[in-house]
Image (tube, rainbow, N blue to C red; front, side):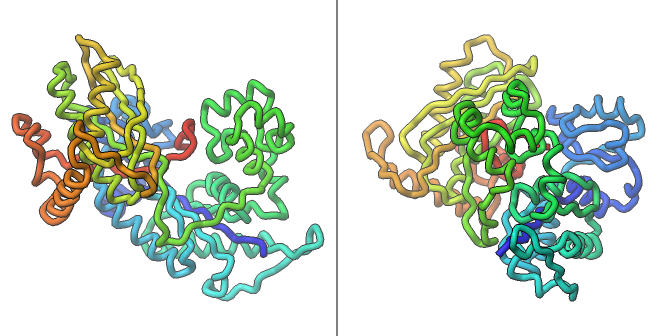
Length: 434
């Protein structure tokens, strides 16, 4: 049976929630920004009015204000964004339990077997290639129902893409923004998709797009018609996946709302109020980040990680990313030590560090056996201690229990670094948020 997949994308989500919290901002150009005093002063989200002045996500506050002199900047309220994200998903759950999140503001819904729950609208079918297919009119009705329900109950606009697979549904949700429904059906997909830029295809980031352009492949249609051997020899397994996506052959199911989410990586980063020039400070801050990463790893139930990554941004805004293979671990101490070793190996004094990031990847999902050796002590005992700390923090607050390493740093002693960032999905290495 032909699938019906809807991709919903909440428009200007952070800015939309801020307007619900502050109705006086309605109709005005606003930007949700990080803390300038902490040097996180970049635009995280903007309203449609701000977009018209050319304000973009990632602009510094001064850049955005130069483009839009009347811009109103507001701070982030991540707890409220999470609350509204949960409310939206509760609406989706009325129609289907096949709900797969793609970040805080995007979801796939598979409504193939739940269309009877929608308001009465007689499905129309059209014969093509010897089979019955849902009409574009009916698919648009389903997307409009989701979109109008969220808007009517919560005051948040949604762009919906409706298709027969996840990739084309995601592509469709980008075509009519804000507050629109696009249909990429089996009947019209070649006509709609063929001429779109290849960069619009899911997971075609900057690097992949440049390689394809060098091969003369600039549209999704050209990629769909490309020589299989050429694409596979250039991109390997990723190339095979991209060909399937371009040809509408994506068969990946939408996960159940209760299914365990699989992560490619788990990490955290921080930008600091002042440049770091002390190796002792670097060690402290790496431990702070590593502790949040280890906690997130345990919560995600992904098992142990075998790769530690370190990202360093200098005061001049240049940066480096390095990584190393390690013994499988989920312990903060081991992750931090590996990250700190990477820093010492790759950054020589004098240095001025503006931001740091620690990430782990290569999850075993519980399949690895830990080797207990003297250099790391008793793994089971250390892991039990860290899980006990997790429970204390859940009850009393993350920042209420900190390592002695931070005793001389009053700012980091009260830094809830784990809950100050929302995890976004990551897949192919060169994926870019669009």
